[in-house]
Length: 185
Length: 185
DNA sequence: CCTCTTGTTTACTCTCAAGTCTACAAATAC
DNA sequence: GTATTTGTAGACTTGAGAGTAAACAAGAGG
Image (cartoon, rainbow over the protein chains, first blue to last red):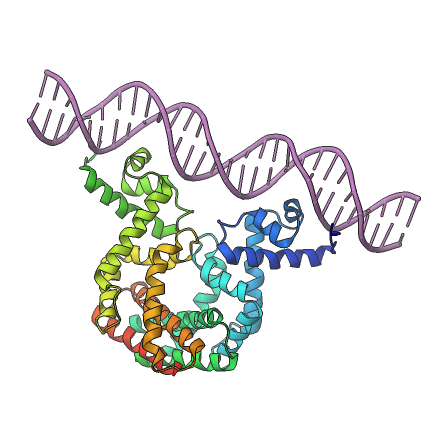
């Protein structure tokens, strides 16, 4: 008979967001019921509604927080040699959030907009950098999209492969990106 | 007052599959209602049930066909220098099916299995090829996943960028893959 | 001309998960 | 010790979309 642990409002909210991130990252938005989230949080379903208006509200909060974590660590200003390591650290600190953003939310029409801001901006920056090396607009566009995809997929593949040494990983992702740029020039 | 075009059963079935591929590729499985599919096919909703048992049955048929198109053109035997061009042709012949498989179905827990056969096998082949160059198991695994991702994302980026010359595209995707392999060695 | 098949329309049931309401229990703060 | 807040339990409403049923229309082939 375990005594139920009570939490102050703000703490519980965070804990629910953690649980929801895990739950949604497991099966995506639609396939995850609020019962699943509640179970994951170790709390009854009604409690969710004392913190969030609705399921979509909860999901947006989850994505918002993940996105905030991300931009806080990576920044959205420019691409430097600190960008990839920063991306790596962000993914390491919140792997479920990272996967959720780029493997799920990016494909969900209703929520794409959140992560799209980040993606579009990243691709734009990449395109600017590439404009100097690649004359043709269409091919510069292609390269920019692919560079972004490689950065993200490189990080996720690293998570999936069991997270071997992050330093080496950052180095290799950077070199992979360089390889793509070479290929496009 | 347009007269409704009638079709023999087999032809209508194919036409529905075409329409469904387009519809699902637009918004994903759950967000696409059978009404949407029916509208896209220019047919009433009831007709769908004369050809398919259920929504999931229809979706599986769509994915099956897309997968069949793909393996028919690409083959699932080994990786050669014809693989990327073949992948490209497959995507060109059925861009919606291609996007549907790799951007949506690959993330839908209920249907992942279909495209997973293809993906897993591809990654396995890549891993075998890389084993010679990369000693460490984890890193070989990482590289194999990334190589596959680059192939797919490279093709999709090419579709998104407006499909400039396919020959050049195949060449550049191949070189991008090489770049990734170099980076991982 | 008759029949079979492909089609439409409309209205219906069913189911599942979101979201609500009520009543009650117990930890904590003052 | 009492008020407040955080929690539970469970029954309930609702809505959307899947799936069904029935009656009717009209082209195609013999």
